[in-house]
Length: 600
Image (cartoon, rainbow, N blue to C red; front, side, top):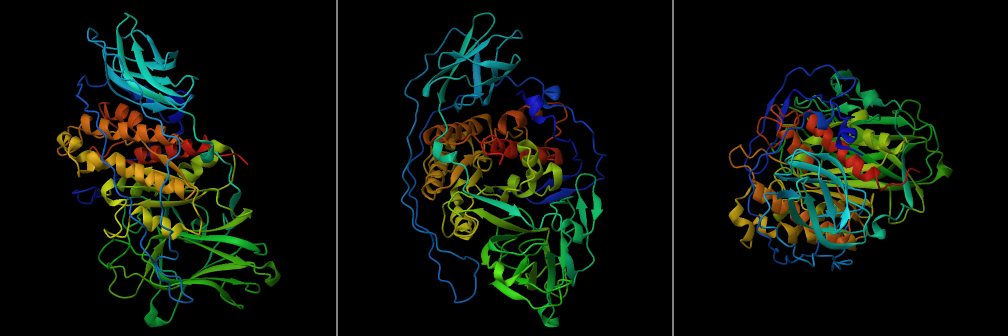
């Protein structure tokens, strides 16, 4: 399928800019009125222009081995779920079948054709992007491991091709121009490891979807429903994935009173309409930020601190009747949490409510302990409840943090439903860590936001099956000289991400790596072609080494877009994205999952 066809559904909505800190960057924002929703957006291919002709020298290096530490131990108080519910077992990673290049491509010294950046691994049937120079205006051919690839697009500086059906192995990707000139790059073709394609044995159905919420102690607030910034009442958006981010602090989430001095609780109650019976996953979602709220000044919005989930068989309005607490959490510091509990159908419970007695102080308020929440979800677990549930966790940097504020039909969940042709939701948790690079992902003591924290909170709860890893942009911000300097983020990137992949595989998760998006090199202190090529190479080699499900290729479409005269997917800093770019991130992740998830 062509890029134009794949991306044609992406709406070009954005006109305000969110600049969220990445590394040394500060947070700024610009807001303006969005344009009306377009019925049909221009395809990506229609706005592409030619690529620059610079050809950097890429030094092939191997990163040193990184020691994978064991997981932080946790002691739990009796009867109370703490910030970290479960102790994750220590991991001794063992790799699956390893594939590495076994052949050095033969150079063509007399050829003017140069491949600048191209995928270095792939699965038959998947698209790849090839950037370079002197490909010619007339279409030539591409061969991968000796087999001719289908070419969907050909310009003098860019080729889009599909990996042909060939046996697994390593060899050469050859670009042969119409004039007979040849350029080359190393390439590995691999088949996805069957363990990552095992159908889930547990399905999650959101039993609250679309049902009205009954509210108590709700402050005046509203949600901007995307697209179009249409105001939506909280009782309508809280169970319907409709509250979208619009760039104004706290305007995208409902705010509830939870002031312990008044002995009042904030209540969100829902009549499920059916008797609750069996295992359930409760989740509240505020935003995509995974950093803990360590103090009241640390973030601009706040989260529930102390709360319970309760059930009732005889309530009529979510307030009256008798209520049974199924679990209680104290001193939560996260903006999104997921919990599992079990109830017996013999009790006849049909109501569920989120009962919040305290929130992390919002520093914009003089009094009270308010909190913000955008969605609440209750997933019914069907199947045998084993180790392969229908669920997705996404661990990434600021691009992940801010991109997945979009809900509704154009967000990740809506796009995934459309691509799969089903109304089923996939339970999703966003672990966005602003400014994160690979250095902090395996660090137990750095800032309580490493992969172990994410896995510890997930273990024995949702047990998220598919784990997307979207890191590399911050690592690439270093100078090209650090690619070979042991101990730098660039030099160690491959080994660190390899360690994350091994941990996830050991814990029976399916890792999916995203190829980092392009950045505008004209901006000061941003990454160069050499550093980005190094990151992309490491991702491609890890994919082949463990035969992973191919993740979304952000680099190819974002580079094509950034080369346009007026890039529609980038904010003014050349690194972060407009609304249209964020929606593209959502779509590409949905597409990557839709290719491997069963439809039923």
